[in-house]
Image (cartoon, rainbow, N blue to C red; front, side, top):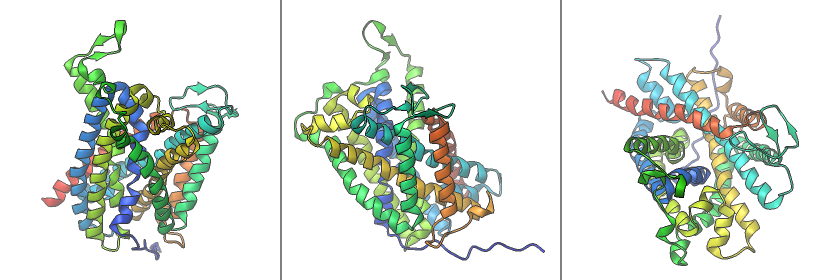
Length: 414
């Protein structure tokens, strides 16, 4: 005779909307992790325009998700579970597809930003140590050892340490994780102020530092400049809007915690709304102020520590600048751990993956899902040379998940 598996523990309703806002402070770290690439392609003005458009789209999308959270107040896992509810009468495979795509997109953030943080720390404090493989699978010299696809240097070991640290913060309860988020969020405000406002206050901002990149109809410079057709400009813009979605739409994490808010309906709505407004401001003003203050080459090289030194006129605080930049990435990793584990827990709860992940530990946290997330990301760091490639590929599933969730809203309203 078959026995039903009953999960007696429940997610605790301990959060208020401002806690959700702090959790969503991950989005500036996502922006800094991608901004250099966009500036290299789109120039400063192009980056301001497209990052702003992407963040504005997020505002409208999250308005739909706040309504869907009110429809399913007991659903952990965020909008992929809403997509499953809307589509399961028509196409049952939508649920597993979108939830896996969503989880992978959030999960790989740990490895991506962990290695990124490790590279910043190594360059600033341990320049003589081996870098090993970098984002695109190339190698900056030899690592300590090789696992085949990846040469393991100090950045990779630091990344593993950070992944373990954020796992430890999260596995012992949501209040511990949110408390860490408040601390890291306070440090995050320092580079945000310097990048967004200081260039205008100290006179470093110059519009001549910003260009339209390939969006002005040319690619390259000088004798190597080539013309770019209108269709190529449109295609480039659409590709970048797709890539930007994983960053600017990351405020959806506020909906993932819907069952843990004391007032699920109102707290979810306020958390999403406040996070969207904050993200729209940051994603518009940060590229504008930072590129206008230090130039496109510095930003394209991801030299954020150098940018802080240039804008403040101080090299005495270099070590502190390293700490605040890394803090912006660690808070993003913290959110990714919390969000990804709840996504796995939610899909296990609805029977779309192995039932063993439908389990809460004694702190009422999906510890098994969180531990699996940790193990997968450590494996990414150790065995995958091109982590950025995985992130870009996983974004296909993330954007597809949003498509099915938005259409699910229409189906649920029929």
